Image (tube, rainbow, N blue to C red):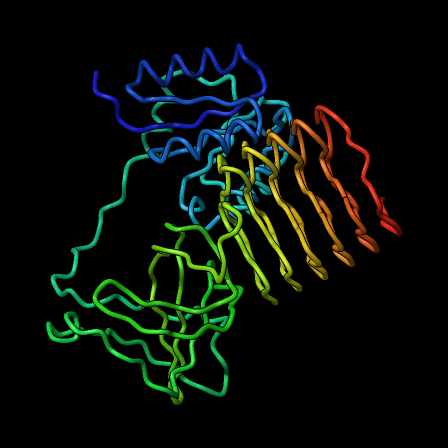
Length: 372
């Protein structure tokens, strides 16, 4: 039997996983399973072919609704249909599930044929519109909530002729741009140059190669948005190998990245200030998940998952001060969940889940750090 699509099935009960997985496989689907959010994110990272997520409303580490909220805030995976499959006595939160973006809300026990028919209808692709024959770059409309009432913005298509595709061109000096990962948070940027391979941008909005990116261009009374993806990152220095590294910078945002399985660090920040590190996955790195070093201050580290790192989940070292660490999940790291070392002071740690970490190494030469 030919495999149709990959389904990610998440439930805290092994017996349920075995029975439901068997039914789906008999219907011709390839299935991967997980019992918690950590395992589900690992599966999504390793298997890019996942076409549907079927999830219980209570996992071993978080609720299914928290996991759904996380997925829908991930611009790389938010388009994957998400279906709740819950016991009959837990069906009272269907409205909440749909409000958060669930595709369907199923209740078991359910007849196997009815269940597989529902899955088939969810995974059947809609009729796709005819693809344009032009090689023009497609520009999408600006969402209504981003449009000023005083201005009317047009949309356009940028048609590149053969000559412009061959030559490297300098941008207009008055061209103002902003960049975004999700169309909500926009950061200023600058076009260095561009060619047929793409644009070189200077910006404080950071992400890993392969992540989607939107460029908003303002000219006169018009605004245009170009959709693309990040192909390459370049920083001023590369003294530490990491998934994402920043040195001697300010006012940057690192959001919704998967910085896992790096040697040695997931995210490395040195000598920088006013950096926001939000909703990143930094698991299974050869040293630390998130590492701040050499005078970092006013950094916000929140809603990140740092698990199963060989070193520390979040490590602040050497004169790091006035940083805020809150609502991070830090589990199964081989050393500390959070560690301060060498004159780190006036840092605030609040609301973090720091559990099942393997050892504790006392912080040295630290003062006035607050934990709650």
